[in-house]
Amino acid sequence: MFLVWALGGTFPSVAQLSLEAFGDPFDGKRVEIVWTVPTNKLPQSLNTMRVLPAVFTDEVVSNVISLCEFKEPEQVRLLFRPVTHGKEVSYQEPQPEKPVLGKSLRIYPADGYINYLNPKAEALPRSRVEGVPDEAEALSLAVRLLPKLGINQDELAHKPDGKQLEFLKTSRTMGKFVKNAKEPVEQVIVRGVILFRQINNVAFSGAGDCDGLRVEFGNNAQIKELALTWRNLRTDKTVTLASPDQIVQRIKGGKAVIRLPEPFANLQLVKKLTIIDARPYYFAFVGGHRQKIVYPYVMLTADADLGFTN
Image 1: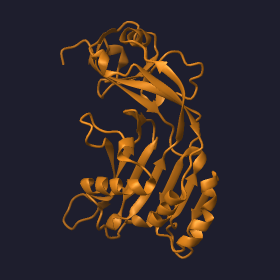
Image 2: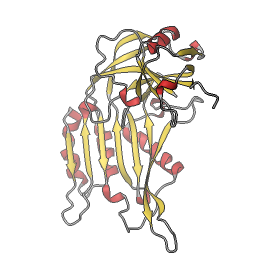
Image 3: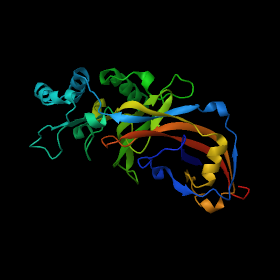
Image 4: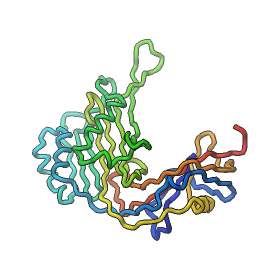
């Protein structure tokens, strides 16, 4: 069971921090809540951060265009020259004789957003699927892209051991009819990873492509899609984290959302919550969407007593 609650003291305006995507509103007034997380597990303070227009260097823009392997790369570089001055630029490679759209590239400095899409890298129905990387290869390929995008691995979220990157796996499958098989056989046609940004060991999280890198690979390890969200952030305010007692009282006051695993989704059954883990995050919008302020929040993991033995 997960509880999500906005961290810190009182924010004068938290209209941009909507936690509804994480779960359902939770009325903890009649629920017993026990906190077991060591107090030294959480930082004493975190920052709210103001979003400024990002600055993508000539080198990064040139590297991205090289990754796209456009037919006329020099013309595309000329088209994207205004990006280094903060201008938004989009390009769709002409594909007049094919039903599938050509490659496209969008760079929006104001949102710190780069998106490259190559529909032809993904196998179409009844076409051959070949060279799609496995999970380990997809991660390795994504990591090799980082220097070209101007990203250091230290800027990405790591697992608790501090050595391995924290990431999510993505994949897309397609049914394949095999002779004498009763049902279509699922085969992976696209596989990728999502790497999350971090600041001072606090990772970013949110709905969709929040701050970080998502890259997916299709046939012969071609890039199917690359989505980089890397907002230019400056400290706005430093806020002191609420104490465990304050967090518990605010959960009881309806200041959190909750997600229960199926089939225990009836919130009325919850009698007691024992909070066993707490992790702070920075809440980021989906890539390509304008965000003014980045706020911190905390995700709490808890054991839920639903009032019966199983």
